View (cartoon, rainbow, N blue to C red):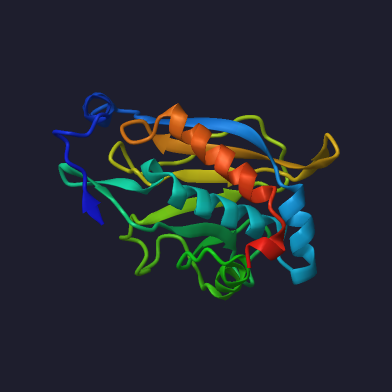
Length: 212
């Protein structure tokens, strides 16, 4: 983790402008094509959600703005951020979810293994990951092909990016899902979201065997 030098950081004026707003978060929803990766991962029993979660986690680690967080009056940049995702609680009714967190790896097979092995915690209960901010939060709405969405935030100093994936559909000859990205404007601009989405689509256009 490194501390950003606010005296030399070219985005410091933007940071100071947006950090004090009552509602500094904004969301963008875009379609992403995922057919090549998802189709090629089926032979390895890797789900479409796991493929997209891998692509999002990898892209967030490649675009530095998604690794920045507030730390007191400082801005810090983590070397690596890790996925925390919403998953159905074992034994609970459909739609009752918890959260699973695991360490990122750039191997798709190992990533999927870690995701499947991660314990699912009940929201609000004691969890060592509750105090971490070196995370990205991910969820899915597989029942909806939504065109817009917003996420709940803890307050204006909450800088953890949120991602939600919508229903997978066959579109334009390939598999497509809506992706909502919500971020803190003091750290992430539309340009950075564009970089992230482009990286996600490049990963999703890569056969699974090239990512093992």
